Image 1 (cartoon, helix red, strand yellow):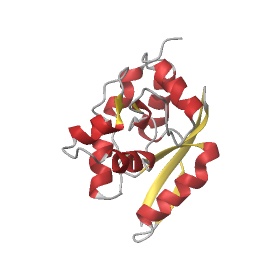
Image 2 (cartoon, helix red, strand yellow; image 1 turned 180 degrees about the vertical axis):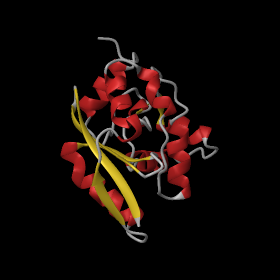
Image 3 (tube, helix red, strand yellow; image 1 turned 135 degrees about the vertical axis):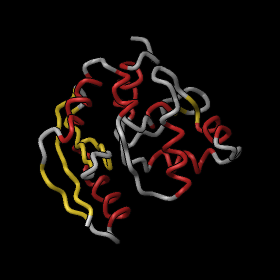
Image 4 (cartoon, helix red, strand yellow; image 1 turned 120 degrees about the vertical axis):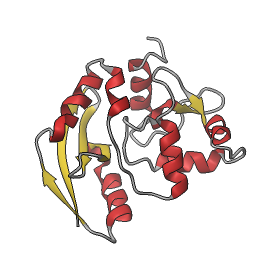
Length: 171
């Protein structure tokens, strides 16, 4: 059975759940008011092996590092380890998301092309939308072809805040 250590931190955008495994790989990072989505993804990804959630205070410094990101140390999330379930295609998309530099964005079609799958923008969007490790796997850095801030599971207002925080959108 997978043991998930969980903590919740306060951020300028609301409370954020941080769940990692015992090797301290992030398995889920989700906004508190979207915890039902997190529960669904956990059940989908780990129901076969089973999992339990165990309260932990700042497991391996992950909570502190997430707070550091919100306090302005933007590069701290680049080194945070994650281990996600999902399909091979989803994991490929999530890995590609981590290659988008802070302060930059990409549109869904560009990401599909980067993955060698031109024309798969919708599939990339679907994988992007099922990312279980919000902020760290920066799905907020993907925007619509026309520059619109489309589709972010945490809400478009959060996406806009994160992009401003990272220097892509100017105040």
